[in-house]
Length: 483
Image (cartoon, rainbow, N blue to C red):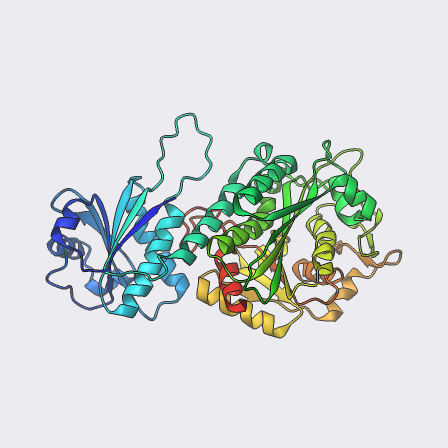
């Protein structure tokens, strides 16, 4: 855990003399304060690049301080969105973090509100990027950040919410990055069980034997293609004595997706160990809420399985019966995510939560529609859509709402079953997938998040790694508004 030391007083020369890596965050201005540490170095750097001081609000600059420390200077524009602030702080911090220091100093300068915004953005970016993520190189000498010293601001809550959010984001990225052979459904279940014990969550597993017994045919159809019977739906329960609402988080946890009998070509199968990202995000939000002691009750449902090709695997033209009795005609075996979510959503809905939120790397069509910088959302409640979009602006993890009109479902009409799993044409598949999932929520208030932004080359917002944990910050902003 990264230690944060807060010093609300302006930074002293003695304090800086001991620092090896320093970030200076100033309000946007047309001139530089004469007493700014390292101001002569900064002026020289600006002159060399033919930059004006206020351009630091777009392009941070680095340079050496007299004692040999590396410094970065950046200006914060109060008009910037959260996403823009996070992106700027990530760019400012990375020259410092690239040297893998054990400690960095963050100096915020300006008025009270400006210092708060600067401190929160800088601390969060330092927390999420200071961690060491999974890597399997023979020579790996990477070091994680150990300490942050903040000058010029003091958070009354000691950044408890941001610490929790950063821990959840780190967990989501770590799980998503693990190689498929290190995170099979069975190994995933072991990790979840350990996390449950550490955090006081009640943990119940619906293994394959139990799922067959209760009639969860949609989930079983996908999982039966694996050589090992280690798939399961895992239910985690967090309770708070002051909670007035119960939220269900549902995550797609396909630990590897071959596409099944409709086998993916190599270029599309590569990276499919990340197809469990929805479950990792759900788990990350649960951890963040627990660390922040959020006054909500949370049920977290993880659909953990693999989509393999084998003689036992489900196939096109099969008809399977889901847990709620809906019969499903299989059209394409690579549309497995909505199948495992169908029965998991049914279990979640039976608990009568105030809101169900599901997360999944569900459709390629959402990635086509939005690219990797936004994720798409759907809901059966207009108010929930408004809350979700607002949470995106607050958190800096942006979402875009898509239509969910009933006439889209004509594309899922089947002649032999209650519904098709998808259409063969693939047109508007992200919308059809959402309409399919609606069959399994019993009209509960529901929000579906299609995580097209789960992997963005070069990082996204505050996070520098391609796998960015998108959804944890957004989820915490949403839950904070619902508490």
